Length: 149
Image (cartoon, rainbow, N blue to C red; front, side, top):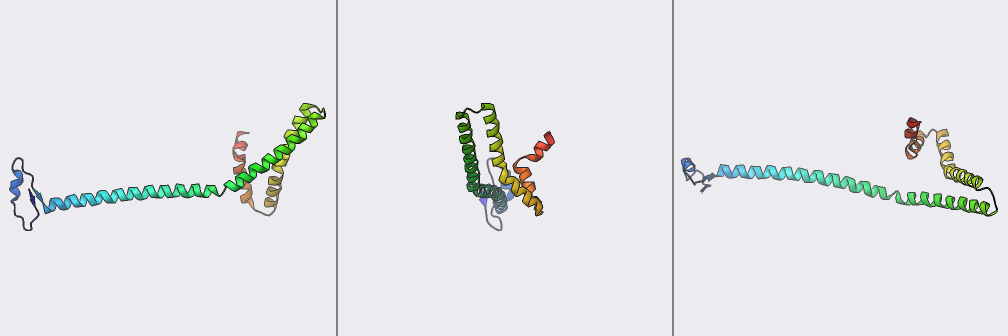
């Protein structure tokens, strides 16, 4: 039975009868309040999920800004690799000792790959831009290497 009248039309003792369920305005108010609390909780959870998703989306979006630079670095390294490989192949075809050619290839490639970064690091250090040195430490994982040595 549902009694939504004010004042009540059904006596409260009716709820004590077997197979009779009495719902009043107060019971409905409790159900409504519980639904509101449940919806508020679900809304907070949804807001948290949206915040996490938005943060991850923005992180991925910002990472796309690096694509051009990463591609340029890889292209430059590949160009240097190809130059050094061509030089080594020419030396081999001229009959130079393969071990010497390989050593020269490795040294030449290493020197060419690190030349510009080391020049920039020295310049940054001379100008007091130590944050660039910190970034280089991180980029080349030098802190980890120093701890391992």
